Length: 232
Image (cartoon, rainbow, N blue to C red; front, side, top):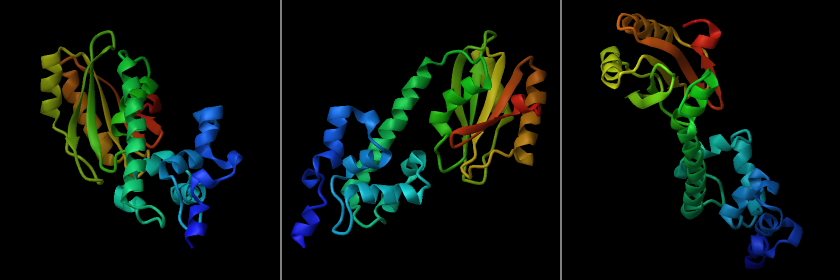
């Protein structure tokens, strides 16, 4: 049994099947998602290789790496062959990837389109399992002055304090704001509550000569823009 288990270790694979060596020789871009995860895992179980185990993990989330990143350590440990150490390694590696993308958003200083706003906000709320409501404050050149989390709620919704939004806008000297929240369910359909809070903020902001420029609903790698849809 020990010999059979050892045969599934990456170091015992044929040269063409070794993802570590493949990465060194051909670069990380040459590896499949399963091969990259297999490097993190190191070895599989007595019944399957690390790559096969990785493929099984990916298949459980419809081969979506973002969904793998949402799996908790306990959820990863439910896969046969994944212990706590391997689960922690996978979770840490995917979190590094998420933070790396977050570093890129620091380059976005001006919002010229809904896509710019999406790129700015996705690393913050795009992969969360709970709902959060954020505000981006802009100056008269649409440059980002500040962005902040207004509320954090359960998966069913959040509470939005209109007075707090406008108070901070005035303190920052902002003349435009962009609203954004995520839908952990994955749907991009705005709820009645989403539309109501948008109109409530729009009416209150207009009275202070502050424009609500957009409201984004973010889910996975997609988003809905109230402004683009003409429902602002």
